[in-house]
Length: 415
Image (tube, rainbow, N blue to C red; front, side):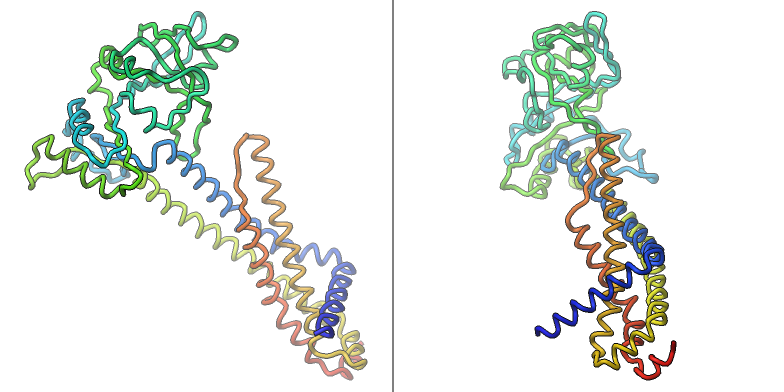
């Protein structure tokens, strides 16, 4: 065993020496593997980053929340809009019946979204504000994170007091130097007192569900400001922790059909939406991107592997005389074989490391310039090491076998 380790050590030193002696050739042979590894890791890291952004967006929407709405979320180029256009909107009475009858719900809320509103305070204004008028349960269902002030009390929600909770961007625009809590802002001609400010979230890449440009008001106030059935009302149901989404959805559909008195032969006149409808479509997109990136990377690596195999054949030819001398002095075939295999594997590992460093460098640059988190996981490092080792073995095995099987006399006479 000691002899084997000694031989491997000597082979490693020979391989390092050969790489140092031919630095230009070594650098050129690394490019193919570097580009291939960088492509694969770059694409997979981009997909991981997008997936993380999607999961964060899903957490904001609510991964255990069901939404009763007029329109389904699973649209597309062939979306049959004519099937849904005449459906009734979810009514406030539907919400009250659902809240009273549903046993699998942790919380139920009713909300509307009034878009493209301008908020004003003195000489400051914030445009493109969305007003969400919601019942009290939206606090837990919407995962609202209030960093300054407080949420509506039960009494304020029921009475519809003139109060508002502002998103971070709105608060920054209206109150650049003042404390917003207790001040009065103007929304749709109403003066509303600011009682809370939400945590800044930032916008998402795939699904923008940020609350930064949203102002929350009690639903009882919103229904006095607008005809709420014209603003796409939605019933949100947060499912109890010990209940599956499928069980809750089944109960929900049964209750809604009962509320609307739909006969068994008639289709539902409402949609039950959930985040899996979004993630299922995006998962298909991620699979295609993964496959395309992996295919491009594999072709790049194959080109790099052929280049390394070619370099190894050249290296064997240049060192034929030295191989003959080593074999004449008693060097075993294993020693000769391991020299060239280790040299080939080292080339690929260095190329893989360079590719990984390029990805880390680009990720750091993106984070510095765009303030956007890029994910390069430890799995990528393991994948890089494994791919590089396999490519090195495949690219170097034939030249190494040729070198190990040389006749020492012929090899010495070749110079």
